[in-house]
Picture 1: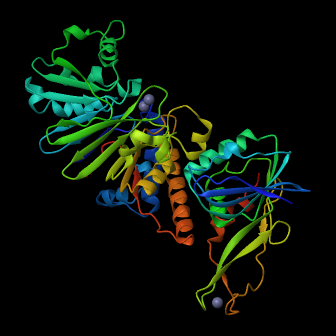
Picture 2: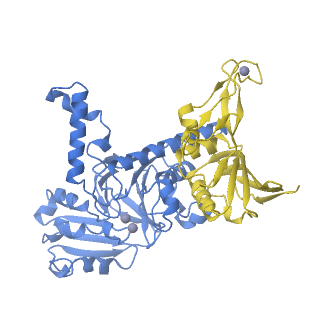
Picture 3: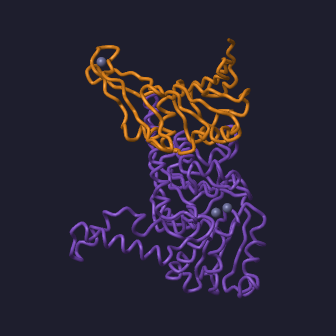
Length: 324
Length: 172
Ligand SMILES: [Zn+2]
Ligand SMILES: [Zn+2]
Ligand SMILES: [Zn+2]
């Protein structure tokens, strides 16, 4: 399986402002010369030595994740990251009106929908667009997006044929050589995570969630979302302290995902749904805080005579591709 | 004075003892998602937390802990014998301790290079440390010549001082 992140921001797209971009360029140039570099041939090595948050940053597009195998490709959510994915797809059968796209929806908050009206394959006659959700409101939510005065092209005039599919909670569904199962997350409006399985590997998509149910007993029928997982994408919108203040806001913090991973033996985590109000520096600071938290936890575990857990994790950046 | 176990769900035991200085709550075990703080009776305005027995605290426990502290914001808190697991989180997570709290003492791990042994040494407020205030930065005065209980060799502090004592130096 390959997992590609087209959008990792939460709640609202967060493009870097011109002032911020200029300040960043200035900062990098100063750094470049301060290190004694004078030659353009030194640029690549210099940039490689700079942490990502001081270069391109974490990315401003909202939730859109693509899961593919050689035979199948599924898209999770239609946040603003979907626009670029659509442009890429236009280079294939979708550009010729012979393509198909399959999009699973976790829920219908704007940040998971707003890319759909800018998904070019949906306007091309001949394309087949399949949309899936557990919730019954899918068709109404999508049709509302393509309604005047919100959008100039009404749903009935879309070029592609759009099909709506209802998913059964906690029942595996097959798609090509992929199997996926929806499990309930903890969010103010019903939201579903997905567990994908292919060739003995498992990827779980757990966004958006506040992860208020944590113990195996509380998770009950939704515990399998976290069991035996090779890669988990988890909601890391806030810092741990922010999470304790923003009760019922529907989002979690990276240390919570790490603790679930430690308990359930999850091997690798990517944290996404970054707060749109957080600068790249602030996200990097939350990443540092998470590292300190994890180190302290490992030390305590060692001191208490338990195995120090090993989990590979990172804060997701737009454009990342991960092999599972 | 009687002690009573008020929470022993899962990995954490909390015992409450009444004393002239207030209610003393002894914590033993792991503070994690199984901890049910809401069921712990907290009589009186002064609470003393003895945290020497906390071996492990995770974020799932911290979330419950911080919310519990917030619910009791009208009380005054003394934190006694904080274990390393607790000190680490105090340092990582600003806000872990409520503003109306006072750290009375905490443990510092020491290591003996000679025999590989070690010991937790208690640092006490007014003795081995003094917390920073708005107009004065904190200080740490480690005991001179900490001896290994096994081989009598001199032990070394087993923490990164700039990190471990961050909460003391911090002015608030
Ligand atoms: Zn969202
Ligand atoms: Zn949401
Ligand atoms: Zn010794």
